Image (cartoon, rainbow, N blue to C red):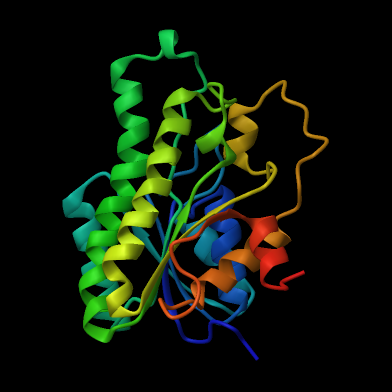
Length: 253
């Protein structure tokens, strides 16, 4: 039995990396996946576009709707949500995965890069959540998953840079607040982070020279995300944990 059959799911930042991995995994479980990201034309150092992800899903017999979306723009997010509602009628799941990093020391970080990292990683999740919540509240159901990082609690700049870690720490705090506010509408809000690095295009770009011996395959991460996608406030909500922790706690191994 498909665990997410016919559920409508928006995954931001899904032209590549963890977002693409989740999009493929959700589609295999029967979800109608909205591939939301800015990339329509492939970049030299960062392969992947919304159309390539959608094509990969469709090649496996899944459903994908590619939509260009800038999560830092309230207008762009609003247009994306409207199109999804017009074409698919509802939104059951939101995965706030879109992210960026600046792997430099604080003293080497220009203000515009600091602001960009926080705007994409934190404000983007805020805007997308605001966009989907009216429909979820009206139906009294839904699940929001915020993709965070072990860098949120690292007592250093982290290999992705201080701005990245700060944005992820704030995203975890945002998760707790939003879960508390929307629980009465039976909406689950959780945060998920990989316990170890998962080899993706984005991580490869910011971790040159970093040892990869402990990097893990994405299967456990996808299992944990699918589990969270099925939650309501009466189940698991307001939790910030790693893929390994969710799998251990809930018997997902």
